[in-house]
Length: 259
Image 1 (cartoon, one colour):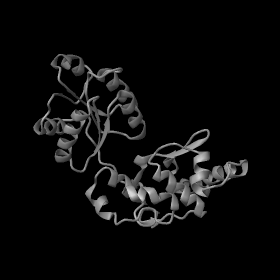
Image 2 (image 1 turned 45 degrees about the vertical axis):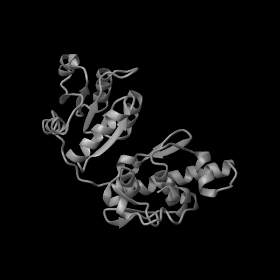
Image 3 (image 1 turned 30 degrees about the horizontal axis):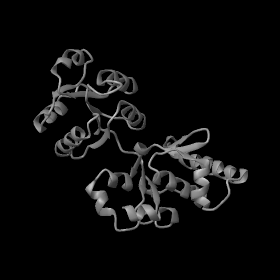
Image 4 (image 1 turned 120 degrees about the vertical axis):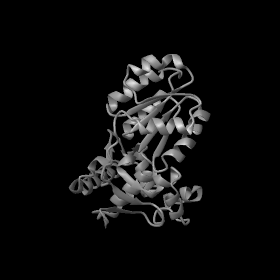
């Protein structure tokens, strides 16, 4: 279950996140402290449930809920607020729940047991990405074959950047270190991006790559990645890390130290 918690108060988010770890231990919790951040996350990840504060600066929770439902009409909105007077307006939006702060574990458990839109389990057909040890990529249990080693390194760097958009200049610096930002190098990067898309198309996974005019990124939610699970605190992923991260790439050394 993908869960988004939206509240302008970090302490409130942390308290609810602790409850959700007990109530829904296999769920993924993403945090947002503003409407803008919540909408950005909703563009990257398809959430099943959003726990949403109503009174926030700028865009309030009612308006944000409408926009989130515009992105995904089946998302379950659960309002969490200190103000009972908003209940009638929230009820008119056909939300899945309305909790008064401070919500406790029983409140959250009942709300998740009575969702308006049932959550259908989906078969996990995602690419599996291994970052710990040597970087490698698998699909349906088999190693994914890249036409060029630099295409694989490009994919590794995009995973390393965790969904952030990478400019052509940044990729040149990462893949060739001191190489100049010349037209020929820029053409090489564009060819590598095309080659990567060509590698992913036959297995129906080319939507992993998001291309911009002069940039490229990955969609994190389309990958089953040990690094992403590690950063979410998944205990199995934490136990997989033994001190090596993308060991074949020099640009990964600093992250290895951080991990």
